[in-house]
Image (tube, rainbow, N blue to C red; front, top):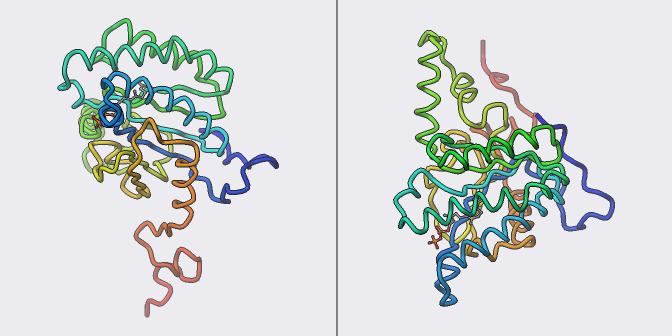
Length: 261
Ligand code: FPP
């Protein structure tokens, strides 16, 4: 686990609010439509989307976000045309080849979430090496969800729990959380989805139970630093109650305080 939220530097953007979400997750949607709206091939949308991921990582570091989780390839994306699947696998490889050094120098710890076994072996090796190489970095944890599906993740967790032989009556929410790909990390505070769709799309379905959701019509390649900042400012206007009352959240009331007994 990494340390307390980074305090924005004195020269930080004055628009940055006090409360920075520790963990931000992003459904990077709309690469294809971004390209189609410009008469370009979908591959160009993915290329621009990849460039945008780089600037978003920079912005996350600048804002003091501790964990950034990005949805790069879902378990359902295997159903896309073969050529596009190959391109997305190639993009992951290129990102590792071209960006690993800079990410490492900037203190980014790369983690993979999803079913690694489902991707080609040479790429599996590269992903593992990138994670190993950056494992001691503390500035930002970058979770790359690749061949990831929330339901698949829960099935995977249940299998591990059964295999471990834990008696059924000892299985708690903590047991399940500890067996998810995100084990040891706090749940996302803010989940952003670009391109105007209002769907969860099998992303962090367990971890997102109490996340704040933010949707923007902007396609992923156009999701700029200022759009990211707008999402964080919007998050700051939310009241997170986690099922409790306003008074309890304000510390003015405690559970059972006005009970008669
Ligand atoms: C959604 O656009 C995006 C994806 C399916 C993933 C592509 C993500 C990137 C290129 C960013 C970096 C990737 C990696 C591997 C780190 P879409 O194709 O669903 O767009 P559409 O809904 O408009 O068709």
